[in-house]
Image 1 (tube, helix red, strand yellow):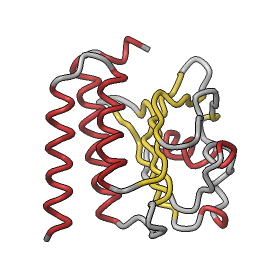
Image 2: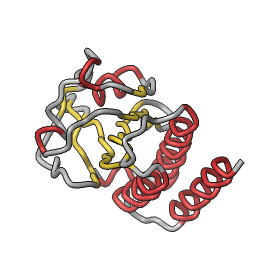
Image 3: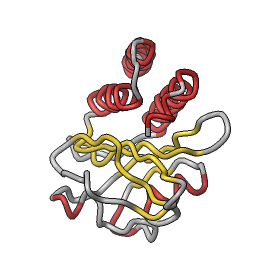
Image 4: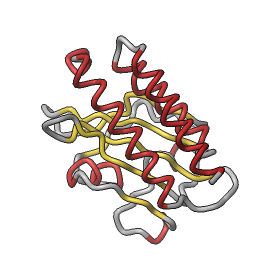
Length: 169
């Protein structure tokens, strides 16, 4: 019950924060920071799809790895698969997952062991994904944590759509 209350509070914090934003960066960075802290993650990122190049770029990231110059081809790696398919992925053992390519956070000094990656959908299409890497306590992500990330991504995407923030890209 305590876990459910914590997740409900996190959802409310995200909703309150999203109501006050005027930019896509504020919408996504604030939401990611809340979910990153609630799930006690080592790193995280919000990736947006550039339709012209069919590549994902991290709009915002948090944690020790600087991934700001990295792009990922849509459909490759966990981020690309989630964005291409529109389906969430929970990875419990990255080293043995054939979809994992290890070049994003690992090249920045974070050894990826576990991951949550959920699509960022507006009303019409997948526009990117939200990714969390490694729980600081060494545990694996749980199904209820995946649902929380999916709710956060949905709220953020609706805010982006409603406020017309995607045109800022």
